[in-house]
Structures are given as C-alpha cells and as structure tokens.
Image (cartoon, rainbow, N blue to C red; front, side):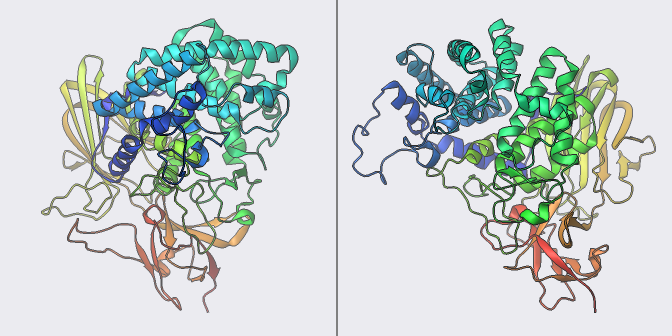
Length: 608
C-alpha cells in the first residue's frame, strides 16, 4: 500500500500549479470573515454590524447566491473554506491564514453555545424534520456535512482542538437524531444528499476511537445504494453524480478503518461502473447537467452543461484512494487528466472562481462564477482542489523502500527515510511562460514540458528505489540519464520506471515524448478531440468547422506553433495551427481558455 507524505513535507515550486494555488490562497484571504459566518450568525441570533435592516441589498456587505440568507443551502461554502484554509496552513505554514481560520472557528464555537451547546448549523434544525416528513427542503445533510468536514480538517491539519470540540458536541445531536429516525423513519438518514456523512463519521472514529462515531457510521452504512452496487447493477446512469460519488469516499474510509474487504470491493465496483464501463469525455468528465451519462453515450449528451466541477474533484478523491491501495498507474493517469482539464481548465486564472460546468459542445464559452454573488457547490470544491496538489505528487512504499513520483509538478519533497534525510527537487527543463518555468538562457536541448529533472540528495548515502510513473500517453521509450549519462540501471514494471541505487547527490533527467492524438466519442465516430499528452486542446472557433486529414496521424493537418514572448519567457507550449483546411484555426490548451469562444470536438472530413 502506498502512503502519503505529511502535508508540510511537499512544497510546490514556481509554475502554473503554484500560480493557481496562489490565486486561490488570495481568494480565501480576500473573503470577509463576517460574510463567511453570516448564516451561522443569523441562526444563532447574532446581530451583524449595520445589517439589522438592509435598505439596499445590492450594496449590503453580504454573500449572495447559494450563500444568501434566503437559500436553503446557505452556509455550505464555509465548510469548504475551512478545509482549504487548513490544508494551506499545513502545506505552507501560512500564519496569516491560520489567524483567520482560528478566529472563524472560535466564532463557530460561540454560535454553538448560543444555539444550546450542540447545533452549529447555518440552517435551522427543523430542516431535518421537514426532510424526515418528506417536505420539500434542499439538501440539509449536504450543508451540514460541509461544516463537519471543514471542522474535522481544521483539527487534522492544524491541530485546532476547538474545532474537534465543536464536532464532538454536534455529533451528540446526530446520535440523538439518528436514534429517533431508526425507530420511526430509518430511510430519512439517507435523504438530503447525505453521501459525505459516512466518510466524515468514519474519519472521526479513526481519529478519536470514540464508539459514538462508529455508531453513526453504522447508521449511515446501510444505504440501499450499496446493495444495488453489490449486485453489479448500473446504479449511476441518470443518477445525480455529485450525490453518489461521495458514497464511494465513505466506503473507502470505512475500509481503511475496519479492514473489511467488502468495502474496498464496493469502491472498486463503483469505479468500474463510473469509469471503466461508462467511458468519459476527453476532459475526464462523465456527466451532463449534474447527472451520470448512460454508458458510452457521451456524444448524445454533448452540451453546455458537461462536467460539473464538483464531480471532477470528487472523482479525483476516489482515484486517490484506489491509487494508494493498488499502486495502479491508471488511477494516476486519470488524476493527471483531471488536473489539466478540470482543476486548471475550470478555475478562472485571474479571479480563482470556477465555472460550474465545462461546456463541450461546439462554439462554447465558459461561464465564470463571481467572487461573492454565486457560491455554487463548485465554488467550494474549487477552493479545496487548488490545495490538493502537494498530496498528489509523491508517495512512499515502506515495504519496498520506495519513493513514488505519481504526478509531474515542479516541487520539493523533504522526508526522512529510516536514518537519512532525503530531499528530492522536481523541475522541468523547458523554457515556457506559465508552464513550470525554469529559465536558463544558455540551455539548449529539446523544447518540451515533459523534459523532467530530479535532483536527489541524502544526508548520507542511502539505497532506495525511486519509482516514476510512465504516463499512458508517452510515445516510445522514456529517455533517462543519470548524472549526465544514459542510465542502464532502469527497470520498467506495470507502468512504473524503477531506479534502485544508493542515492547521495544525483541528478536524474527524463524525457517523455508526447504528441497529439485524436480521441473519438464512443457513440459518435465522426467526432474527435485533439489531446496532446494529457492536455485537451480547444480550437478557437465558434463552430465545428470540421477537419480534413488523417485522424490517425494529426501531423497531416496540425502544426506546432511555438510563439516567442520576450516580456515573459521565450516560448509557449502545446499550441497548434491547422494546415490544409479551408479556414485554418489555432488550437491551445483548454485550461488556457478564459473568455474565448472555443470548440473541442470536430467532425472528421474525408480528404478529397
């Protein structure tokens, strides 16, 4: 089994991933603490300065959209904020953010006391009664899960004991409520978009070993959805995607806590149903309008509402569990595709806000959320997503004395391996604007973002295996040099490139060759998307103008465009222009598209 390193042991270096992390961190700091707490204050009867009467809602200092006091989902975002802030505090030792985080948690404790000592919701308790009575109410368990998640993460990542105390008192309310439901309406426990509750109760049991959390786990684990999954049924088609994926997280955490193989099998069966037996868009998405697309019908559902971002984030969490258990590179490959075409492509590179969906029909434009007037569910998962990079890059396997490189993101790892202090610095040799840049005007060599450099040092010579993922998109054999010489001591097994040696002060360089391939929709063989390595390319055109050429050999109709940009860095990457078309167009990475009109899937036109 692979193990993650502690958050403070990995630091993301300069490049696009660091840029997006910084934008996200600034957004977290920019949001006003009183506004983040507004719905908790209202529920606790705390008057906010200047808001006893709101004469002009447009100018009132409040959060709106799904955080508006009139919305039944109000308060969900703060839980995401707490999780994201806690992760950054742990990763970056961000003292300014920690002060803000601790203050917000202390205010939540104040709200809890005013509510009677247990309830700390941003919504009233009576929403749970409405839910149990089958009255219309919008996902109260979803809202409360976010608060529980955020407080739990604040304890795990920053050691804030007050956060755990709040959760401990709130859980007493849940024990009492679930007891009542078990006697009168057991099915109510599985309403209100409760998918994430199983994971958080299992995680709290893992932390505290308090039996009341296992009691709550057992209340939430009898979901009939799992029984249908056990039968091999397609439990997903036309089902709400973001309500079902968290159930796989719960099953995963229950497996890790109990060791019961049945729960691991359920996660694996979920993946089979969600990905293997369903297919996906080139970007990694499997849904449209928030619902799972039936198996291999992606072309039928091509529209403006593909790939809800929450589902991308949550599927990465599922893939991460499976990667740790199996070491199977296909999960790391899937995560990589999500990072470029979800995490980056669906975050506004200026504001840090998300696009709820990623439109994939021809002539699309991304619709960006505002900073304070929308707060869709995807606002929450986006602020968490941009803190996730450090824990996706490196793993360790103690059984084989291995350090594993799963993702290629410029970064440093500092850890202790038995009796030695190990340092690994991962950079890229390319020269490129905003794409993991390390500029050296004297350097030569191939222009490629996949020219990777690893500097490995140890406090004293230490033998261990460095295992590096060979991405599924690599063309030919990786080119490997060790300390300037072509390495012969390389073992490739199950998609991992393994180098075992006594490391002291060594430099490892790897070149992965990539190229554009055309990925066809399973139910529309006439429609294909251009993908360069893991990066989906978007054509800057307002319609599917069709492409003439051999789709098995995109070089027949696409040519790299290496643009020099002297005010930043020498050149950009992964841009192409078409050739031999009636009207030639520019292709660029989908994650670089902000406000342009674009098309991803193109009709294959036969050559005349």
